[in-house]
Image (cartoon, rainbow, N blue to C red; front, side):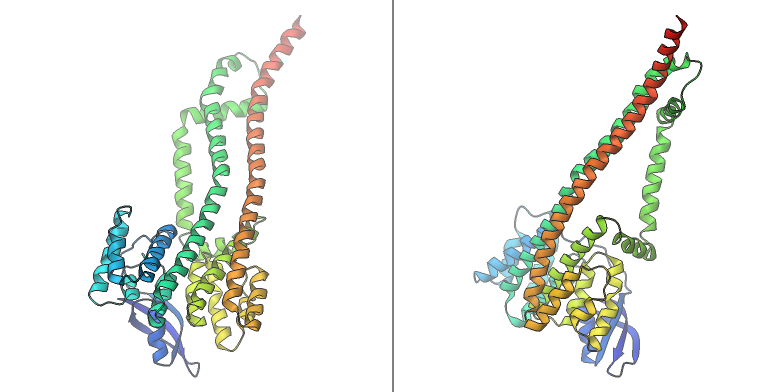
Length: 399
């Protein structure tokens, strides 16, 4: 069990802070709620062993197996035993599943056993299963989670696959330029050395080629240094906040990221709300799955507005980073009493829109990168041909 430093409010609005032991933020919220206090902000203050989180496709498979086995009348212990003995499992996943099985056998609740595995299972997964333990529909909730994480995995794969070709083009440009600069251009050095004067483009090209040929390791070290510097820079919360904010206003890319974040938030909120979890807890958990610190930072105000009597649509409408369709859909859901259905609908629509936006982005990137390659290669060709053509012209003029 971890310790959390929290900030809360009592029924009179008085601010209270302190430290409490809890399994996670949901458990902390329940403890404070029992004491008529409402959680505003929490931060883990104990150092725990970092565990790499399970991937979406593996989590979807785990949920699907739980759903099918429990739905078939198999006990939870037996289901976990069958799943942990699957030969296709990775060693790390098997180790965690066996740890969960051991704790469930000893009488620990399934959701608590999952929470004890550090960051391996996401909060959304744990809290939805905790809700199902109360309502007694574990198989249905697990099936819903399987569908949720399957869609999340497919969306992430679409993003990765859409960027594969541009990445290949980028690597190809670097490789072609490196070969030309390091091997092809040096073949012309003796020829150019015999000429009295060289064009500016050729002089620049020879200087760059000489540097690449003799000081290539400097370029490599600089590239590694820049990469590490950027990684360190954006590991600072303040810088990551500014980066995430700027990302939303980039041409083309910004619109795509807004659509993806909206779809992710709507899908998570829909899954939690339909599982019977209170709206406050839904928002606390959903904000952590968005993937943009700038948007996440605005949810303290969203939660405060709802506690003060605002509608969800009104509070969400103030968030900078979501598409307007989300606010409209939530408003319709509130008016018709079908909020979970409308959230699922908008999530499906946003995922389709993100797919279209990705295709559009790639259609822009491909010609841009081809033009960049053409310009680079064209400059090299001109820089090589120009002095040779000039020398032929001089020879022709001498006769």
